[in-house]
Every structure is written in structure tokens, then in C-alpha cells.
Length: 398
Image (cartoon, rainbow, N blue to C red; front, side):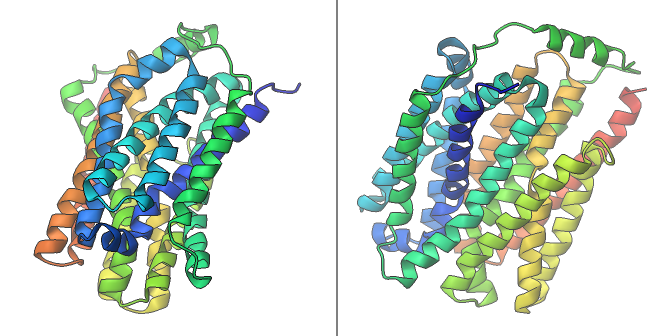
């Protein structure tokens, strides 16, 4: 039987394909933006923090707004807010105005998340996990494509701002397209499927009740560390390649493609093996361990092939951790899922704000290598938190 929302999903996934590009567009144009605004690369990295500020501020109201007025207007509004960001960034020479545009992008990000995830779940209720996993896949594909677009523009002497403008045009097309597409009715109450799921979950006997101040706080902190692991590389990988490893500007930007390919492989891998062969908590332990080893290789071995392999591994073993943290949170705390997952989302947004500020300050004070050291510390912290959750899980669930 044909699903009436197949065409709608095309526009939704296109938005996240472009979001994958937006996630790394500041890092990929760090040199161009620093010259345009007459600031240091570290100050440009603070624009990533501004996106996090906008996203965090919007998180407190966009979820309720999505439930109240529907998914379609929220998603279309996000498209046109992104247009403001994508046109404004290359056209202004004011750093402060660019900061405001970046905050706008963060608000758009929250709108897009709050509208798209529920819309996909409501459009494909029997395949909701697959539908939402595909979001991450399209994000990774977009992040893989952008460095090639930037290289094409540079090779042909085309203004670098077109990497922004093209995305702006695509967001307008997507917004207009989705305006004419059908969306499912908003589900505000518990469906019979949800009630059946809750009954099934209640069959799992608990030895002891989980505590928000123990297990909950640890999972919230994993929301921070899992996002921080990823944000460091999205922000600093090109600069790290150029300044620390000694690559050309072109080759440094291309590292983002290898990182994004690794992230895409991770999404596909998790979709296949998760819950069938491996538990989410195991992934939260194993992934940061391998990522830590890849960082050590990157820090001590200057061979270009090793750099490429390490970059791919970092994309592979830092992607998908945040989504698993959300899954574990709902497993521990089965009631008020919206509220408890919001805590994890807020921690993630805090990472988007704080990580570029902290790493930018470390780079100014000590050097670019401190981005690697910082992320290794974050990886160790994430491993310790996941081990704690694993031990508590054995004590809580029978």
C-alpha cells in the first residue's frame, strides 16, 4: 500500500542533507570568513557557539509550538530562517552581525528538529526507527559533499560565498515544495501502539528505581560528551590538518569528507547491528575507546595515509553516540520521555556552545594541538560515564 507521505519525506530528507553541509560550512570556510570579518580563526569558531546558543534558546519553546500549530509551518519557517543565515554570512563584513545570523541558524536547527522527527515518526509509524536513522545518514552525506563543492568553487575561481548561496536557494525550493505536500495529523495523545509498547516495557522487572540524580545525570553528561567529541572535529579539522599536520588548505578541507564518510558508515552499521548483535551501552563504551586510539595516532604519526585512516575512524566512532544516549535515557526513565530527552538535548546544545569557546581559547593560548588533547579528555570522560551506566544497568534491570 502506498504511503501518502513518501513525497513529503523527500523534502524533509533534503533539508537534513543541506543541514549536514551547514554543520561544517563555517569550519570549511574558516580562512575566508576570518579575512572577511577581519578576525582570528578562533573568533570565527565562536560562530559555531552562536549556533548552539540559538538552538538552546529555541529548545525551550519549539517542541510545544510544533505540537500546537503542527509540523509543516515549523519546518517551512526553519527553511526561510536558514535562508537568512546563508545569505547574510558571506554578504556582511560585520562579525557581530554574522554572530546574529549564526544565532538565527541555531533557532532554525531547533525548528527543523522539532518538526521533522515527529513528522517522520507520524508518517512512518511502523518504520519510525529506520525513518529517523535515515536523517543522520542524509546529514552525513551532505557533510561529505560540501568539501568537494568548495574545492570545485576554488578550482574554478568562483566566489566562495556560493557555497552558502546554493544552499540558500535549495532551502527556498524545499520550503515551497513542502508547502504543497501533505503532513500527517499531530499525535498529541498516546496511541494504542504506544500503550502496548508501555505495557511490554513494564514487563521488565526493576530491581531498584533509577535516579535522575545518578543515572539520569550521567546520561545527560553523555549527551554533552558525545556531542563534544563530534563538534571538535567539525570545527577544527581543516585548521588541524593545515597547522598541525602540515597539509595544504585543499587537502585539509578534504579531511572533512573522510570524517563524514566515516560518520555515514557508522549510521549504516548501527542500523544493522544495534539491538540484534550489540547493545547501545556497549557502543557508548567501545566507540570512544577506538576514537581515543585514532586521536593518539593522529597526534603522534605524521604519515598522510595514517592521517586519512585516523580521520575516517574518528568519523566512524564519534557518530551516533548522541542518539544512543537518548535511547538509553528513555529506557531508564519510561515516563515523561519528552521531558527527560529534553535534558539530554540541552546538554548537547551546551556542548555546541561551550566546546568552540573552550577550544578556541586553548588554541589562542597554547596551540592547535590542544584541540586533540581536549577531545582525548572528553573521550575518556565519556568512557567512564558509559561504564558507570553499564554497572548501574545491571543493578537496576533484572
